[in-house]
Image 1: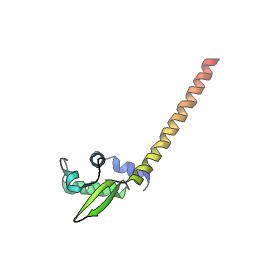
Image 2: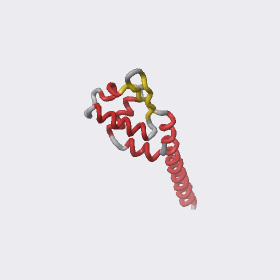
Image 3: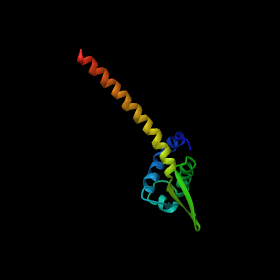
Image 4: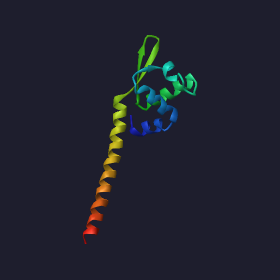
Length: 105
């Protein structure tokens, strides 16, 4: 999975709600769809997008499937976001050093 796929998948607010529900542990589609403003088939489509992006693991259990957050997919996204944070901190440090040099004169 590329982190770009995860970002695109998480751009949809319904998919973010699904991820929030799954933070507590694996769930079948019926439990995920419960209380949502979209139909169960629509939830299934969103689950497919999240799975294709590498953000969900799907495990067959009897006649249903359990969906869970995929640690590897989330880790790849986290590593990418960490690089953005590292870049921002480095830029902040450079700006602070330049400002300190300007004040020292």
